[in-house]
Image 1 (cartoon, rainbow, N blue to C red):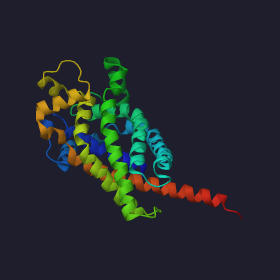
Image 2 (tube, helix red, strand yellow):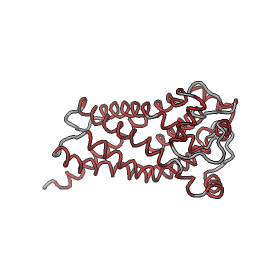
Image 3 (cartoon, helix red, strand yellow):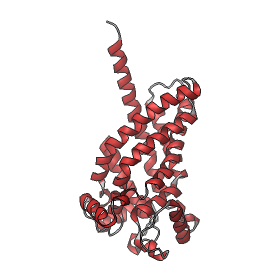
Image 4 (cartoon, rainbow, N blue to C red):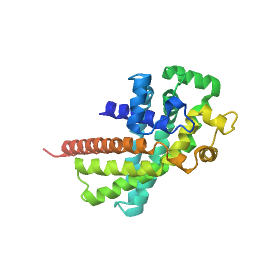
Length: 284
């Protein structure tokens, strides 16, 4: 399950990265997710969309462990403060934001490497070579150049995501028992809504991560682009308002099954471990 999720993550984010390119090579222009995948496989090889899978696998395990552990503990603590053991949307949003800080600190360098490897005609043929080249030519800061932008995107994303998920659970699963169907539906809808709402920030993050040469040259930017404000201005300068929503279809298509799987797996293990713990405490 985890392997499938990470593979799907890399597959759709390869498509999304390409479609978010502000000034792509004529050979790398796409009109749809399916068309992009088909063209990439046909012209660049079957395994090309999965480039960067290894680096994402290395970061995903510890990042997601920190993510859900922090969220569950913060949610429990803040709900006790705000709502006396009830369910507070404010507490859920803050807990999701704090979990994002830890998650992105681990995943941001992996994201930089993955996106650089996924760009059309990328010079990087392996993750280690990409890490070494970026480190040698741009320094350690390059791996965190988009960290604040990533947080600016992911904190709203996760706040919307968690608040929507908990709200939908109140509607379809008011007793908050283990209900796989409700977890899948709530998780998928929450991920889709959060993904659509934060697409403009994701476009800016992609530009900061990839430092797309053709786009920077067209915008008369010398050196490296840094800062979300500069990224926002560059996107608007090159593509206007539609530029902020490039790749939204791929982003939503990925996030719906991804968040549905994440929540269903998380809720299953939460139920399984809680039940096992209670059974161990039961008197004989």
